Image (cartoon, rainbow, N blue to C red; front, side):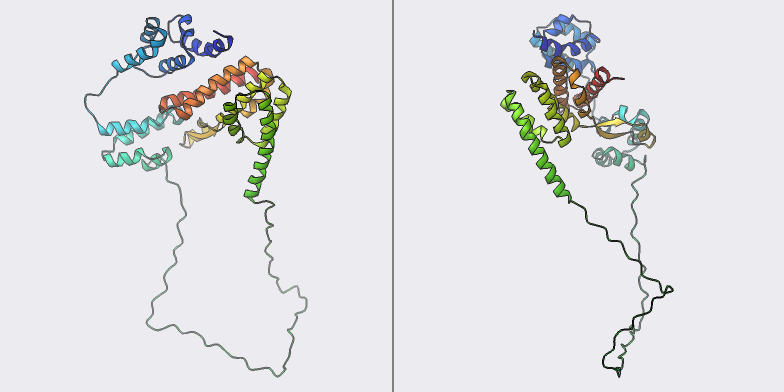
Length: 366
């Protein structure tokens, strides 16, 4: 086993050993994907105990371990004796309401109000709502205030047709030509206030975006030349450069400087992977618990994890540390973006938060 492979497995093996009584040597024989699967199973609720998983690992060939664990999960799956559609719909609603984000009190209140509804069609409609709309529909929070239109009273009806004053025709003046009278300056005559004219904006939004795209393309030409000289794999170049085109021009300037200071090709290749995965993480919005939001009943708000701030500590990170982070981050981002299992997506989000916290604790001076 190479040092790089050992480093990629080390953290997850230690995490599994924290839950399972199994020889570490057996775990290191497994692939990183198998280790990640076992990690997910033992850190989430499952009908298969940790001791059973440990026994399967010790008594199975490495290539059969995951299949044997999945078979055991299927064998002990608890199936309901009868189907309750109401309970099924309510369970589907509650599974998307994460207690660690909204708090147990709010989730329990939603559960109690859902249990009081007997109309299946109403429950189906509630299951398609967002969390905020669901709280409004259940009466937990007030609806959004909207300004009512001003009603104009109708004109009173009258049997007589309205009369209009006839226009008056002025008699012609004896003076055939006359100039208008210009009033003398008098402070007593109020002058009409002049409405200030707002100057037009310097640039329209589409012009600003066009300028920013030009900046990005200019800087990407420099980065592309550096990446080609570093012998990055062509497929990685194509996908990675597309991601980097979404980076802000200010950060692209910083990336060019870091590349030029790195000089060595292997270091540039690793940094290239860092900038790609860190940008992908920044594009993932996660729920963040906030004390003010909890007080107001919202519980949490959407936010992104800023990874660009860690560009300043790259000089303190070795190639091995960077590769370890990149491998873990790529697995977590893949789980969040591609996994159909909501539990795996939650685990991926928590792993991303943990990675950011690890970087902060290890490399940011306190």
